[in-house]
Amino acid sequence: MKKSFGKDFVGVAFRVGIALKGVYAAGELLAGIGMAFLPPARMDRLIHFVTRKELAVDPDDKLMNYLLTFGHSYTLDMQKFVMVYLLLHGLLKTTVLVLLARKVRWAYPVAVVVFSLLIVYQCFSFLRGHSPFMLYQSTLDAVLVALILVEYRRLAPKPEHPADDDAEDEGRHDA
Image (cartoon, rainbow, N blue to C red):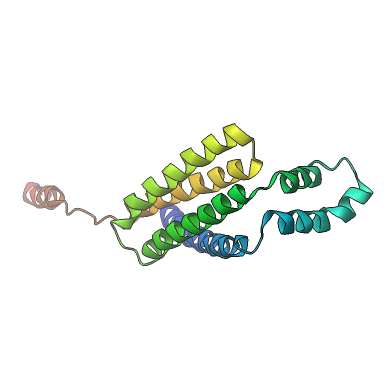
């Protein structure tokens, strides 16, 4: 009974993880499209609008000051990079997640490789820029990789054990 609960829990966690990551990937696609309409000056104005009330209350707010600094340093090259990154990242994840949701067996190892490479890139990016967002992304992707591996093993065809049948037959002959 306990084993059945564990299998059910893993299956549910896998499906929930895939669904949440799918929503997140769709958000990345939309954000990538939105980035096309956020040139540096507009991004800076948007960040000023979003942060002004909080900074009026707490001028030392680290997150708001981080966003403000980001807005000031946001360039056209950054806009293009972020737009392309979000579009490719979202499209790649969406494709892999759809294949996993359809239980396409070859997609499981591909998904592990894809998400593992994303984790490596995100960790490298975190070490360069110290963005907590990259660390958060890596953690979520690592959990998803673990769930993918468990689900892949769970869906593996169960080998027949003819030796067990022979043992049962031998047991009958001894009796």
